[in-house]
Image (cartoon, rainbow, N blue to C red; front, side, top):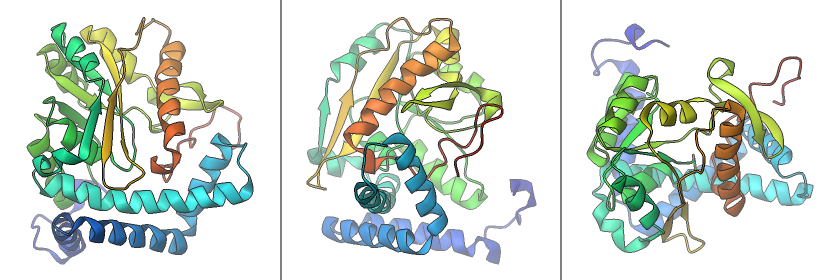
Length: 304
């Protein structure tokens, strides 16, 4: 629904569910760590049991991307995916509602010299992130080492969108609407680091088809376009929760080589290869709840 169709006052009853969600996020952010994990796991398992449509989407994605898994292995990973994303809700709440400095002792940053060297070129940097369940917490902890801006998708609910955007502006230098290409280019040309996650399906009009887990996948062209417009290096970065469920790792990779190449499919393939490699290391932490293969080449049937 368009935001202009919402009531003008946030006190209207239609906003009460959003107020409850915000209250939950604030409360969850301050819970003891073990309770956060338990609550997140409970939320994930509840959704896993009660929302078969999302369970089907996750199962389909994993079946397509990991055909080597047995049915039992895949069912287990589906369950683990919901648990990881449930915990991710509490991690997001922590990122939005608390100072990230209280978690600095929980994070290890590997190979940050790659980003420092890219920043030293003086052309700004486009950081390629990934939609892991830990995404917002990763951004918050990354900000302790490098100030950055973030590209985001506005929320449909204007109250929750304000809450989310204000929280992200406390973490990042600027929160930039993903439709604001000029804003992204302007910030990069001013020498800023901009964090951008190009691993979702935004439709045929903004995409090319490039391989992802061996599947021709609608892949956003914008990564190469931004690099071409700014001359900025493109630095892949991944962030994950460690197996102890108490610590995290940020890992920076060298800038993409010969990027952009001028070939949109080749450029999208290079970006997809990094994202696929990162997902294979921690597949349960990826946002498989998204219909990644929604848009198909002309004439191909849908997967979902």
